[in-house]
Structure formats: C-alpha cells, structure tokens
Length: 627
Image (cartoon, rainbow, N blue to C red; front, top):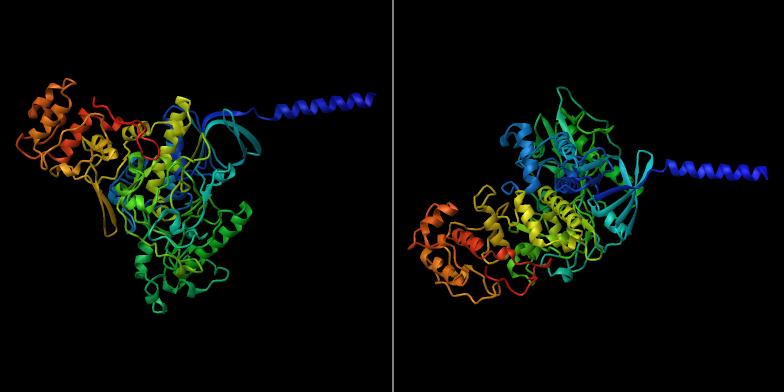
C-alpha cells in the first residue's frame, strides 16, 4: 500500500512538473513561416499595421535569396521602385553612398554584399515593436482550429505551441502549403492547362536549376582551394570564350570573354558573386518532394559543383587570386546558408497568372489586371541548361513580354481560409514563374501578404474577404505600384490617380518589349482619343459620346452633363481653376485634352476606382453610380 501511494505521489509530481516545464501556448495574430525575401517583407508589412506578428526562420539571417542564398544582384524593376523593393533599394543607396556605387557589375544596377543586405533587414525588423523573430526555429506540426491555427515550433531545444489567427507560408519551396493540404503543381504545365503557346505539349516534373552561389573576394596571393572531388574541367570549358570549347555553336547562347564572366556579378569592396548559368554553377535537382535529409544530400552535391567551378576559374581561367570571401556568411565553409531556389510548388489560387495575362492583359477572359498588387519587368527567364535532357525542353531563356502586374488572388489558395502563400509558391503558371520569381517582385508579394493578413486580423475576416480595392489603397499609400507605368514615377503628383484609373481599365497603358527591357507606358502627355476609353458597362447612367479627338472644353462639358443632377463643383466651370487645382502645366479650352488630364478629372469627378471587384477581376456590384 505504501509503495502504491509512493508511486501515485511520484506520478502526480512528475505530471505536475512536466506540465510546469511546458511553456504556455504563445499567442500571435499573424504567423509567418520562412524569413526569406517575401517572409521578411510580409513580417514588416504586418507589424507596421500594428498587428502582433511572429516570424519563424530556420536560419540565422533574414532575406532569403537576397542574403542567405547570396543572390545579391537584383534583377529587374530598376525603374519601378515599388513598395518594399523601393524601400530596400533606398537602404542600399544610403549604405553605399549613391546609386552609382551599386553599379559594380554589368548584370544589374543594384549589387551589394549579402551580409550588408542581412544587416539592413535585421535593422528593419528590430525597429518594429509589433514584430518578433525566432531564428534557428523549425515548424513541426500545423493544425487548423476554429480560431485560426495551432503550430508547433522547435526552438532552442523546446517545442513552442503557437496560436495564430492568420498563417502565411513564405518557405522557399511551399512546404507549409503542402502540409496543410493545399493543391499545387510542380514542373512544366502542358499547353492544355493554360493555353500558353510556348508551353510543352505534355506536362512534366522538370523545374528550374538551382544554384549554390559563390561570393569571392580578391586576395594579394593565390587563394587556390583544394581540388574538389570528381573534378572534371571539361564540364566548364564552354562557360566562357575558350579554345577548348568545341561545341559552342550548338549552345544557342552567347559565350562571353572570361573577364565578363567574372565581372558579371562584381560586388562592392572587391567581391564577386558567381551565379553563372552558362555551363557554370547551375545544378539540376528537383528537391521539392524530398525529405529534409534527402535535400541536405542533394544540396551538398550542388555545393560541390560550385566548388568545382571555382577550381576551374582559379586553375583554367587564371583567377587564382579570387577565393571564397571571408566573413561574408556565418558558415564554416564560407558558402551561403542556403541554395538559390528558382522554382517551388505553385498553389491553386483564387487567380492564376499566366504568360497570356502578362502578354495581353486586356484580351483575356478574366480582367485580372483590375486586381493588380505588384509589378515586374523582367523577361521570362528559365534556367534549364543543367538538366540532363536540356535540349529536349522548351527554349524559355529571356522570352520577351511587356512589364506586368500580379493579381491579388495569386496569394490566396482556393481550398482554405486564413492562409496566404507568398515567395515563389504563388498561383502562377510554370512559364510565368520565370519572371515572378525575381527579387523585386517577391519583395512586393511579401508586402502584400503581410498587409492583407493584417487587414484580415483587424476586420476579423478571412483574407479572401478583404476588399481588393482596400489592399490597393494601402499599397498606393505605401509607395507601391499597381501597374508598371514607366512614364509615371511614384513621385509624380498624379501617380495615384493614374494607377487608380489604370486598374479600372477605362484608360489603358500600352505594353511592349524593347530588347532586354519590358515596358508599359501610360502616355499621360499624349492627346486623348475617344477610342482610348473603355467606359461601357461601368456606370449606371448612360454616358454621352465624346468627339473622336476631344478638346478641353468638350471634355469639361461632357463631365458637366454627367453631373448635371449632382450639382457639379464650381471649379469644373473654369479651366484656369482646374489648372491650379491639379497643377496642370497647361489647360487651354480649345486645345486637345491629354490622357493624363482626363484620367485626373475622371478620378476626381466620377471615382470609378471605388467600384468593387472580385478576386477574378469581375465586378462585385452591377454598375457604378455616378457620384
């Protein structure tokens, strides 16, 4: 009996103390898993909305591909400093002194040291009182609850239980979305799926090559590494102009001189980013469905290829004075913390962006441009040269498209609520991923995810129920672009008006490809033609017709007729007063009105932007009432 009592007492004490040792569930409003490029932007955007935000990152740095993967040469959006990308760019300029100091290599106008980028992100995170970051933390289990999400996180030899209202997957490969059962696609889509003319006839599981980037620095003495295992110089003979390259004509790629290869990713302070796609250190493996242990083995092979390429550069091309940079990454071997993933899972979202939407946004069945929340201008760029059957795959290297916008619905999975997806796992076609994957776009996508999740918390709604227009208003207030107009920078006094009218589609920009540049122009200073306007179906009242080439006085009369029952504002009667009110440089009654002037007046007088739209771009209400 005494033994039994002793056993029961011991058991009770054990249970009591085990309960005491277990930390209480941690509460947060927005939980973001993955502190990469998008996850960092999402966390900052959410916290800046005054919402309690927790960011869980498996490594010691924030920034993902921009920092931890070493891809510190920004691709695209040089003239489109939208939202959080613009903020990060400005931080780089402040750190290095001016924009010219970022133009150290020829692949980009914004090159920087990964450690500097990590420091910038760290400083931003530390400045936000509503943001907490858990480094070296791994998510383990996820459970949907009536009030949101319950997530178990391993951190500092403990398992934390996190209760969150909104959950954002910002992982590199979309692992969280897969874990909660969201349908997704991996690899190349067939032509049948989206009707993209350059897609293969049959779908396959081929994804883009990944890269273990190298950051090198100049040394006064040779910095040769030991000869890597299985080194074969022939693999790299055609990385640059080289007499040993015997099949360059069959490559369909430009072979650059060796000095161009090295200076391609030259960074400040005599450092060099080696992320070379032409028979360089790209490596093919589809690690998406692998276990963590399997991925680790695969990534070591990618790392080995990069070391082999470095040895080739040192011994065959004569760059023996370049070696792995010291103190750039907090790793034993001086290599990046993670590989550079160009492609991941792609969820099935409320909207899917295809190359057709990018190439001809106004000709598609769904007007997704009305729900625009981020902009990009990089070509469709797929890396497949390292694949064993590369010659059998479609040619998707720098496929030309105009600049474009990403729809909000791409971040919202169809199948589940209170969950958003960002980074590279958004709802796009495989081909479109070749441009939406670039850093400036991904930064913007993260910002949108964090902003939308925060609004969902504040309004006690699912992110899917947050008004598209409300998200767009917040983005415009934060210096974000909705549409990629090159001729209307965000400093322009009418930037917001042009963006608002642009996403209605009433007055449309013109997109085109010019060499390596992808562009869209609003043509704000061009004379307006009546044929430029797409007003049908927008308003509840019938609209009078404008002359084919309307003058200022004709347009003002047109607006006065529309507003005749609404007591038009007095300033509408005076071109001079309109000129002063909207800071127009000229506004003469008998001259042609410009597209920009008409857009400003349309925005101010009829405000069509306020007409709600659904996530697929269609109207939420029958028609817009003239104010």
